Length: 176
Image (cartoon, rainbow, N blue to C red; front, side, top):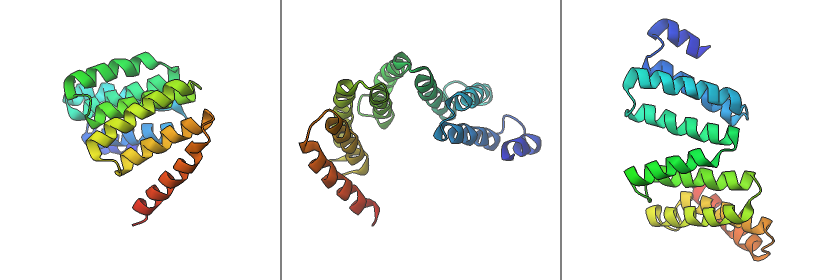
C-alpha cells in the first residue's frame, strides 16, 4: 500500500518510492517467496537504472540483490561466481561486498547439501572477515559459527564444543 501511495504522490522513479519497492522485495525474500522477490527486485533494478544510471550505488545494490535472489531461485552458482569475479577485480578480495558474495556462495553449497564445499568456503569467508574486521568481530564470529555448524553436520564431534563457545561469545557481545 505504501509503495502504491508513493507512486501517486511522488512518481514511479522517486528515490523513496524505489526504496519502498526494494523493501517489498526484501520482505518477500525473507518470507521465502523468492519468485515474487526476484520479480520485484528485477523491476527495481530496471527502474533504478533508468532513474540513476547503471553505475549509481543504488542501482548496483539492486543488481547485487537481484543476482543473489536469482541465484537462490534458480540454484545458479555461476551468477554468484561472475559477481565474485567482478567485485574482486573492482573492489578487491577483502572488500565487504566481495566477502558478502563469498557468504552467499557458501550458503548455496549448504542448501545443496555439498557440505565439503560449504566448509571450505565458510573457512575462506571466516579468514577474509578476520583479516578485514578482526577475530572477535561479529561478522567473523558469525562465519565461524556457520563453519562449525557445517563441521558438526559432517560428523566432527569437537565442533559442538567450539560451537557452544562461539554462540556464548556472540551472545555476550550482542547483549551489551
